Amino acid sequence: MLFKISGTGCALVDHLYNPVYFNDTKFNQFLSRKPGDGGLSPGKLVFKEEFEKFCKKDYLQVRNKITNGKQPVAMNVGGPSIVSLIHAAQMLHGSEAEVNFYGCRGSDDAGNFIENKLANTPLRIGKYITRDQDTPYTDVLCDPEFDEGSGERIFINNIGAARNFMPSDIDDSFFESDMVVFGGTALVPHIHSALDGLLKKAKEHKAITLVNTVYDFLSEKQNPLKPWPLGSSDETYNFIDLLITDMEESIRLSGTNTVEAAVNFFKSKGVGALIITHGSSLLHFFADNSLFGKISPATLPVSEKVISEIRQDPDKTVDTVGCGDNFAGGVIASIANQLMENPAHHVNLIKAVGYGVVSGGFTCFYNGGTYYEDFSGEKAQLVGKYYKEYLTQIGLEEDIIT
Image (cartoon, rainbow, N blue to C red; front, side, top):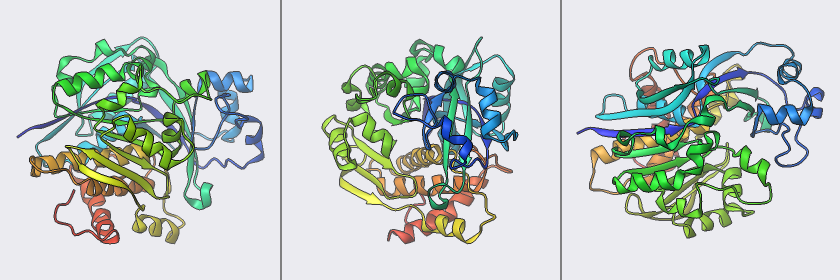
């Protein structure tokens, strides 16, 4: 029986610069002084136009300076929506699942690059509209030595054609899915502001709803002292079956100061289940809905096998670009697999989190968020080895692979 997944949100071209060292003296004048000021800050995103206002210089000149004139090590398909969906489609190889993307690109070389690359993935295109503006892109500055070798990124984004992608561009076939996913919509402003209505429509069609977030620079710029909005009101949260966010995003969305307070906020607003990632630190989760059952707030670690391989082999690629996006894709794939296996049972959220953990961890071993397979099912095989180890690490038996 077909299990249809449809997603929309941020899709762009990533230009990866690696290594770029954030403690280099030439970085100092470009670092953020206060939230939302347009400066660079490890782990955060800034828009190209805002960064130019901050430094009062042409962006390309500044990029040349802080990268020492280096060319990007890779050009890749990026964005929290499309990367997570590509990964989910790869992990669902051999199943009855179908993964579709709805989005917007420009009529330029970058847009053609994305379409050509997608042809080499199992992701299907539900509707990919072409606009006159530039295809969105992000320059990703990667420092593999940051955070004691765990690595970190800085993102400089040109929003381009995504600024004019509208809710009306999403047709009814999107909502007629078993699961709908909204990824990184803060970089697609009109979709982001309409999330409550879009999620409500999905629930009216009996779809499972999943939202994975991205740093909301627009809201941070507009008012750094207020919680970031998600949709037009907090009613949005009541239509989310699973929210995936990172630590800082959870704090800013909730307007709280601690992860415990953030968890309580999301519970009070009606989120069905929540996962908060935190780089290489413990992640937090809870659930209280018909999809996952009731799970009290708890934590899980990252993959010891991934961390061990990074530390034991200094020559191994350590690129954290797309870790969070692939984490979300792993969770999506696990939910789909579990529901296809046992549609009448609760989804095991711990195993879904675990598949997300190893999916995100495996991303460290190649450049960029998107992995291009040599053969169908290759990535699922590679990630599956880490998943088996992770289940042992957290003390679970492997009765189902995802």
